[in-house]
Amino acid sequence: MRLSITRRLAALCALCIPFTAAWAQGGPAGADWPNRPVRIVVPAAPGGAYDKAIRPLAQELSAVFKQQFIVDNRPGAGNIPGTNAGAKSAADGYTLTMTGMMNTIAAGIYDNVPFDILGDFVHISGITGGGQWLVVRSDTGITSLADLLQRAKREPGKLNYATSGAGSTGHLLMELMQRSTDTKFTHVPYKAGAPALQDTLAGVVPIVVIPAAAVEQHVKAGTLRVLASSAPAREARYPDIPTFAELGHKNLTVSSWAGLSAPKGTPPEVVRKLQAAVLASLAKPQIVGSFQADGMTPMPMTSDEYTQLMRSDFERWGQLTRALGLKGN
Image (tube, rainbow, N blue to C red; front, side):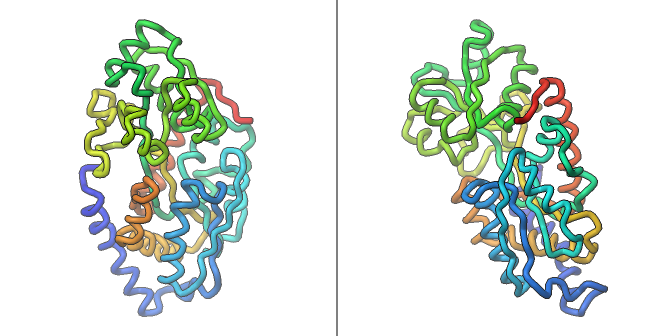
């Protein structure tokens, strides 16, 4: 995006003013929502990226609406069980669901997903997004992306890279890179990012693709070196780390993202209230600071923008996962 996050938040929050006025004046039918606690289904385990993003936001929404917004963690393969529970909930605004990029990937690798992420939800707003870092051990002698690609071309298939699993953001990013640069690496999938990082630090694998927050301490210590970020622009916290796009690989701009959705049929006025409140919350310094402390970036998006992102990534990752023949366990 060309607009800075600060300018974009200001522009989006201007959209909130009419809705705020409507709340004060009573508004249309459903203006008394919420008059009881609201549940937010998080289809991932406590302590993970989804959980860390939603908890400060839920606290803020509780203060805004004077009702509890309760986080309900329901982890499971491909984020499917929790998202399905959200999709099948009553469309009354009292059950919301954290959705995200994982839903667009899961649709292509799992058979018989019991919901349609595009058709069974109304998507309210983006919450957070972030790129992946392509990282090597400093003792590999690889100092740039160009170095890595040259070595891969000299030794096709001999360089191993670790990710948090088959079908993960890091895995799909590397598959895209191999296709666009005519290189071949060997994927070593792990069950999570932590063991992938540990084996990279131990020298079992020389390369790992992982979110920034997981590795920044090792980069600062000099043990690991970042070659490129898949974020759309250099991050303010890491101004020396180039993006794939500026290194000539625009197709490798990939963000892991998450947002808030509700079952299809949720009253439009409830969606508008939530969109306005989320956008206003994401502009608050305490929310921004909380996200940054966990290596995340606010991703303010209107309902229409978030819906379009969901649709475009659904098509993008569906094509790639089908081409790879990936299947979830």
